[in-house]
Image 1 (tube, rainbow, N blue to C red):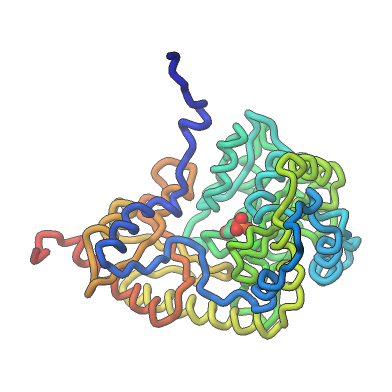
Image 2: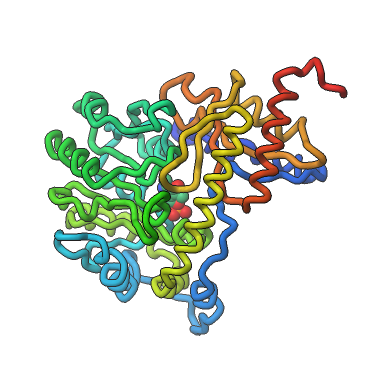
Length: 409
Ligand SMILES: *Cc1c(COP(=O)(O)O)cnc(C)c1O
């Protein structure tokens, strides 16, 4: 028998640092510990009842495919009732500009695949959403990263972005609001990034899945969208998803929005290869468009309170971090050398009265070796009482970890 060998792509596939502690935390849970999961962006917020009802009320005889780019009525509703609320002066979005995808994740994959060839490069700002590099690996492209710093509130300096462009760069990929940084790009900053893209012939893949999640702003404020930036028509590709907006991560429903018909055609053709996005999810997505404004007001109030509690709690134990402006993550430098080791230890070897915390080590959110080694990402997706408890656990854990000789065991 001749032996089989995996591709280099398969062999070298990176694991997600968000799920890095999965085995350890499962073992901890099985051993009877209560593990508070702050490592993954799975909110505890209720999905709007109308969405759940859409799943319950499905009563067709056949659970059929939908068109590869999504149900036309859903795309029309998305354009008319959602996107055109914030495109400003620009030409309205039409159903033709939207390709419905299996989560925002697939929209990212389609967008990146549409504009790069193997060997090409995308430009990101680190720390970045790790799946950008996961998909880069899959596509045989590289990620070049412009470093942003906690001491600057992770602000993105356009001059540094422009200086990092090489002849292999095909696109800039940025989330706004940012995961894990919480940075929200202003309309003017988006205009500036579009200017850079135009000068260098780059696409701008703007990941706007947290559009609703902006803090310290009047109720109902959305993060500025690339879809409203003049001059972005040809180069702009917006990534979107119902996962975070409606706390519906399991629906696996997202979309790609672009006014560039060639990008749309490429995405449609990729979509034809996987035949169809989930049919019933699109009904739920349609129902979600009726979600009253009050739902978001309440959700935003809750997240902002959680953010404030976490920022203050961390500060009270000597971990000073600027309050994130959007999304629901906070990147925290810890007074340890190796945050991954600490995070593992916290779950495996530590508990405070039977409870511990699972955090995402931030090293995997950087391309530059060594960066983020002492940082973790916390997702504030648990209620305030539990978050306070988490701060206590982290505080006691840090004390114990840093002076192990005083460990009574
Ligand atoms: C969660 C997330 C996505 C996509 O998630 P899906 O569940 O696949 O829609 C995309 N980008 C960022 C920055 C995210 O945090």
